[in-house]
Amino acid sequence: MKQMSHMDDIPSTPGKFKMDKSPYIHRLRWHSSLAKLTFWSLVFLGLIFIFFFRSPSTSPLPSDPSRRSLRTYNWGGSAWEKRVRSSARVRSRNGMSVLVTGAAGFVGTHVSSALKRRGDGVLGLDNFNDYYDPTLKRARQALLERTGVFIVEGDINDSALLSKLFEVVAFTHVMHLAAQAGVRYAMENPGSYVHSNIAGLVNLLEVCKTANPQPAIVWASSSSVYGLNTKVPFSEKDRTDQPASLYAATKKAGEEIAHTYNHIYGLSLTGLRFFTVYGPWGRPDMAYFFFTKDILQGKTIPIFEAANHGTVARDFTYIDDIVKGCLAALDTAEKSTGSGGKKKRPAQLRVFNLGNTSPVPVSDLVNILERLLKLKAKRNIMKLPRNGDVQFTHANISSAQRELGYKPKTDLQTGLKKFVRWYLSYYSGGKKAAG
Ligand SMILES: O=C(O)[C@H]1O[C@H](OP(=O)(O)OP(=O)(O)OC[C@H]2O[C@@H](n3ccc(=O)[nH]c3=O)[C@H](O)[C@@H]2O)[C@H](O)[C@@H](O)[C@H]1O
Image 1 (cartoon, protein in one colour):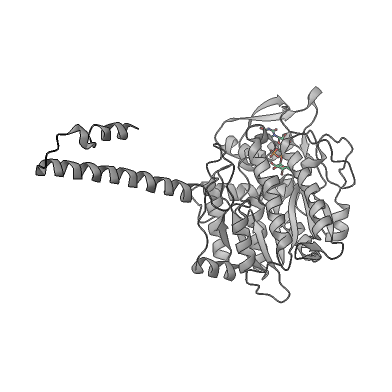
Image 2 (cartoon, helix red, strand yellow; image 1 turned 120 degrees about the horizontal axis):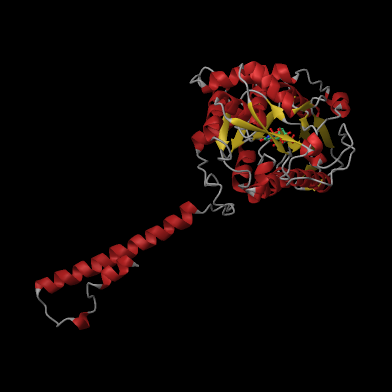
């Protein structure tokens, strides 16, 4: 508006001037209209820029100022398509072609690399959001690139992008790991859970349902769906209708959504309830990870305990065991049965616990870290906050054992030893070496 008033200082209405045909006046008029033209052209160009470049034309993302990473991504073009095709190309007999969402995430990176190593075609998709340090995601991306996995930058809410990917590659499977994780963060940013775990899931399933052939989908649910249950170990048959966090509620909603898409469209769907997965290249928001960081920096760590000094424990599960469970779920997934958006016959619908079956108190986790780091932790014992945490998790894995041959092998001591070795290497300037 300031510019407008400045422009207004230059009289442009001939009536304000004596009709003088002097060259000066001509020049002034010419300048004035040129300035006007320039100004309005700039405004026009500005509007075009805002319209076409700032707001995604395909699937507008909800405005969410706390998630700066929800942006428009560049994709498309023949070079891009070539990379997509090459990354997804199957290189082993009977191999599968898998779209891995959340490929720059902790589990996504490990699963993508394991699939690629055995000759499956793998294409990653990730929005590289800033829920935690994106440089760690970029480092994982670099790691995957070295194994031949290309990660497309984009959001699972972008249906045009997803449709394009299915147009370029006839994926046989989708390993859906993109999600808003973290139990406590849901109090801070509830919208991001709805965006990724509900809207994003529905969007992905919509595209999968219309794809021809439809892929089989394996996706990450969570142990948190058992919520306030007290009967342990948790079995897939137990109730899951009392979530303690919005995170858990969105994962539970995901399971119901999976049921719907299986029922109506014949999509083959397998949900995996992960139990507190840890290991190298892990998530910095998780307790084992930031406890390690804080112990090394001499900072106090908050250790939760339940009422009356009750133990808080988790069925911590090592990443390599989880990867085996994920691959087995993909390998045993039956084909989807629909086409053209219609179900032909009933399709497979499964849900499995992937845990370790040996819960460890959080205080013991800290004891192990102290031994590995050769440092004493400064402990601040705190009451378990009422922001989503549950007191105890313990998986009954008999179903996964029976149907997937899932057999976790790594105890917490062994797994944390591998994590700490990676952590020290990665954060001591050995970021490249850690690969
Ligand atoms: O299984 C899951 O489905 C989930 O696992 C993970 O959640 P959690 O099991 O809660 O892991 P995590 O935060 O590492 O806390 C571990 C323990 O430390 C305790 N804890 C935590 C923080 C703290 O400051 N102090 C503390 O004692 C805390 O009370 C808990 O007992 C994933 O983050 C989540 O995305 C989801 O995948």
